[in-house]
Image (cartoon, rainbow, N blue to C red; front, side, top):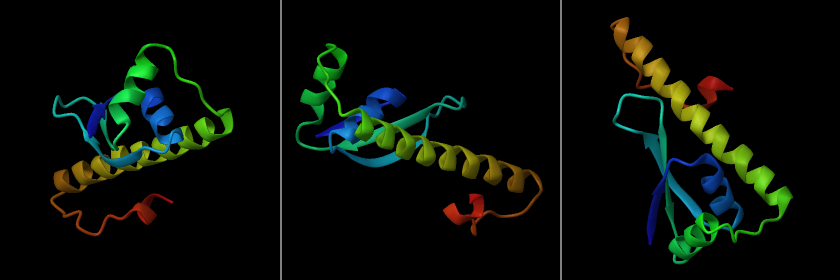
Length: 102
């Protein structure tokens, strides 16, 4: 099953439950809204538990998952920002990697 969300905390909770964060991208609205794509058999059941307020969590796992999803989100935002800057300057951005920002 596939689930899309732009809720950072829902995403962190899904990660803490072992659901795979398969992709993320910027929403096409032009705003800095990140869409997270999760894949897994139980992802829709887990989403229902989260939305119904029945989610339980190991706080240590949630903290780690929140850090991971935020790191990936900020890397995406920073890489898009760099791409835009380079395009405005007439350059290319083919060499951008995650290590560019570390």
